[in-house]
Image (cartoon, rainbow, N blue to C red; front, side, top):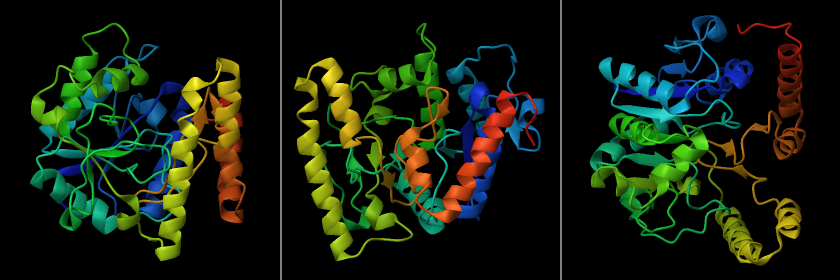
Amino acid sequence: MSERLAILVPTYHGYRWIAPFMRRALDEHWPDHPPVFSCGLTPEEAGALPCLPIRDPALPRDWPTFVRDAAVELRERGVCQVYLLLEEHMPLAPCHAGYLNFTLPRLLDELQAAQIALMGWDNRRYSTRAPLLGPAHFRMMHLTGPDGPRFHLHPALWRIDALIACCELVLRGEDHSPWRFEKVCDKPDADLPEMWRLGCYQVCGRLLSAEPPGPLGTRVRQLERFFFHKMMALYPHLPRRLGALYWRALGFDDFFYHGPYPMFFSGVMAKGGLNPPYVRFMQKTPARRAFLAELLAEKSAHESGERVPS
């Protein structure tokens, strides 16, 4: 594995209690991962976690500023590529270390890409139609269309210069939230170098998974994807309240994505609490129920002020 590769975990101050769980999940499911660095925390908040300490500890903290500062520091250390993994998007099953450590970094260089998203185009949620690369590039999708999810903050491999440029673009405006990051950088005409705007890709997860589906599993995924795209086409035409009920009933964000970095689509947290669909998913197996119980206990201890990060 190249010393040019690292993992960066931006951590919202209010979710700092999750950071040790993220590191634990990485160690369990991606045991030979690249070096991991948290950012967005003070050394006291990070505890024993490797951290690129925030320069200004005042609250609220500026997300693109501390991500940019951390990325610049990593670049000065010789890092050229970084997996950007938000603290709540931890892996939930075995990762494919060979693809993550070697194949995707090689493809990022070969394609001169800005980003390779690990939430692949073959998940049921995205309906993007864009060119697919051939078998030599594992049928990755090249996000060149106007609706391509460029620079979204699901787990992805980034060229560190592109990440820094995206952060600096967001900092030109007044809203510095992660949501604004996605909206600003996602635009086809975003004020970014053309090579970055045209250099975004998504994996085909079933081809890069540590536990790839067989022919039947592949067909089931294809049918599920077809079904959800048809159902999603109805959503924009529904009244607002009915649309919200429809969204929840169909579970558009409620699924576990199998790929080189298996994850729950909508993450661990929602509106300051544990994401209900994630909780339901974790309750399905004994091992995940035990992990969930620890998460709940740590969250409770953090909220009561009884626990400091370790």
